[in-house]
Image 1 (cartoon, rainbow, N blue to C red):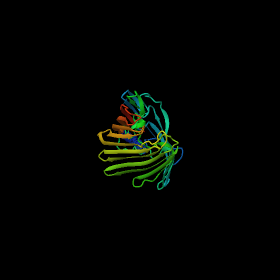
Image 2: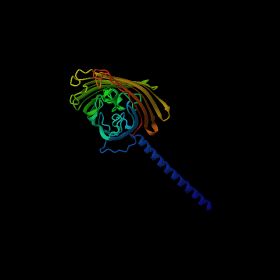
Image 3: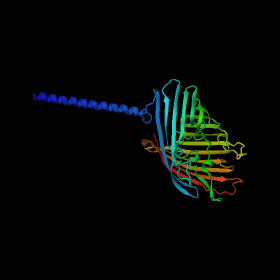
Length: 396
């Protein structure tokens, strides 16, 4: 009898243990299913659309840096928001499968405290404020192309900023992103003169209220055109292709800026850029542009303004944490702030990715020089401006 009771107890224990194991396995299976579902979502966001058949994505980033600046007369340390890729957040909404048709909307805003392109020796802090970047709706047909309406990128937005180096966070053709608000010190007049942002203009498009059309991609080519506020219009042709052993991206655009926007603005712009990345890491980037001025006072009979820019970089994996990208660049910007101006710039950029924490660390150095050769600015002696910016960007 005792043996029978012992056997029953052992059997009961085995059954209970089996049940516990089965429950644990069931819990583990459920957790794995949840993890897989999370991996399949954008950033693991739990967002439910107000309407059925709509996918919604929340995204954003924070990008902060410390900047050391020296204009030859003064120097300072500033804490800035890197204008190369500003702090921002946004929401994207897109219809689920509807055959050849799809529609969507995007809302994106930025908040920059101490913009790296606006701070100066006389204004080391700038009050932060929200500003719109994208507020648009779009309709797309696979064979007919995409139509966009609202506030957003024109056809030539980023046309002179194409860059496969992996170091855009630290510096690219938009020279004014680091210290655009600083002014050159005139040793003759003992005073500040034109700002970096006025001297170094890379003739890139921007964002405005507009209607835009993008053609379907054909053999890597896409044609875009837009018409926007204040009599603005532009057209661009872009190319992007991955070919063994390299990746190529290029673009060329033309923009007309109406008199409604600014009577002194350069009216007709032709600009573009191209970048090549070899699969072993070496990369080359070039950008150039030309701007015509209307014969309007005070720009009557002004020479065309132009710029040329080149960058050489290398991407490799020095650490297990993520890829490393380094580059050097050089640019010449003529006749932008005033006729006879010759602005030159050279720099060094380093970006280190930390994949596990979804963060990029960067370091960028710039030396900016302005020579003036005209009757108006005869015998002018201007100091160089140097900026060094180090920071981190976290994306979500």
